[in-house]
Image (cartoon, each protein chain N blue to C red):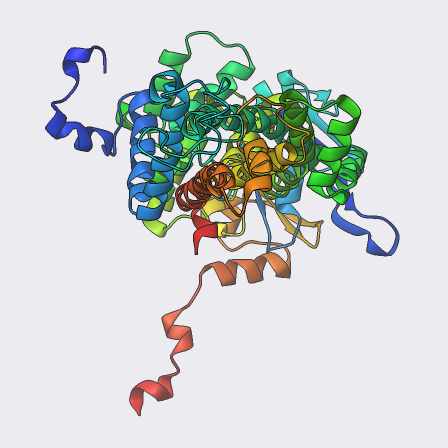
Length: 259
Length: 310
């Protein structure tokens, strides 16, 4: 479905040159969920932005459905690939109602029966018709992210790029959104690329994943390998340790208990 | 809301407007407007300003009913010249024996006309240039902003004077001159707002839906710039009135016998010591209307631009 070959993204020139992504390649099959993991500044989000044209591709190729994507991207591309942004507080227009936000993609692509499709899109993401004419400031973070997902799904894309879709939400809402995404993928046969710094999130949603650091590939591994702690590289192992977070037993020395 | 019958009773109107779950586009919009109105009415000075502006509108609308005399033809030149304010002539009469009260009332039409036309011409120009230059960036930005700088470099009244001198005196040319000189600040404001908006996620999101550049600018960027621009234009209206009056005073705006306030002050200049009312009454009108627009602008800023209020 999606082929990334030797992708490079470079900002600036000369002394100010920054190589955000260096020579990254991966392949995502149809209906698969693929994870991109790494610390802040590892270039994982830049890969997504380069795929959809928000960041410049300096080298390598991006193929969707076996065809190289045109620059600038055409409408057919946007019908195939859509993106959900990290911060639901920033990704919805503050002066547009949910209805207006959702009718925009339909208007751009000249789609018919906007009424029913907007209602259906809201249903799909678990929001009732009562949300339709609200402004973003009348919604919670989780509800906003649901609207953003509904907007991305309106054009019935085949690939959904998820840029840390849950990192701005609190833990319980995070789980709701992840389950919703999982459900939508199975129902609609979507292909996901999920970017996250949270290994638990990636392991929950994805089968295969790519670990990145400083714009380079560290290793390609599977969620199963993560769970059984079979990572090949030290860096991945340190990420796994970090994701297990604060360990009470490790942090509390025996001496502190007995004293 | 399918029909008027389902409209709630007036008692429930507030609840309907403030409903957290609007059922139609219109309810959502009206609810928003109502919230803005509540913020606005918390400021008594702003309501006072709105009152003055509404009064100006009504006076201009019903000038022919309100004015007791003709604004253009005067009374008997031997007996009715330069009469002090009295029951017959509330604001007195001028050197042509015309009733100043009637002239001030008819003058409101000209003032309103000037303000309206200038804002209708200048605001869209400023908005268009500002948002296009801010959103597109690059050489378009450079060219448009240098053009704006050139216009900004001239003092407003001097540039207006030059335009009127070139086009010939008259109220229409004065309006064009003021409009041409008042758009650059609006372009600057719109550009600054656009620069903040253009990199936000919601613009990236609509870009990823395949929206064209004009669609993004007019559908998504402009609505966010409009509110701060409306505030600025309202605050500028006092300045526009004063510039128009200034041009009229210099004889480059409205031509006699039009009852333009600035021109009326100019004729009163000769009798300033002995017949003060000839210049003072139109001057007072200019003062009150300018004040009204300023207060209104301040109140609007509180509503539309909450960040700048405090």
